[in-house]
Length: 107
Image (cartoon, rainbow, N blue to C red; front, side):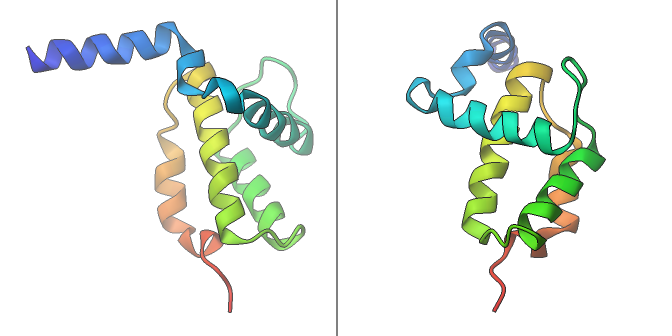
């Protein structure tokens, strides 16, 4: 029964991707998504790659000097938006673990 419930919840999330993004914050999520796609010169309909995310977060950290807390906020919004459009991002968790220093405050 528990497996059936998990399957139902997962299917429901995919059927209604908007439910992954809070209605009140949708404009903020869309802005972050648009900026990401523009910064990476992604064409409409193309699915972002691991390299696209890596380059984007490196640019935000090194060129724009964003703090770790802001990077986490951007990561969360991009993750939710990507998940709502294309499904769960499997590689980004692995990438984040390898590049955790990017998300930590520098002294």
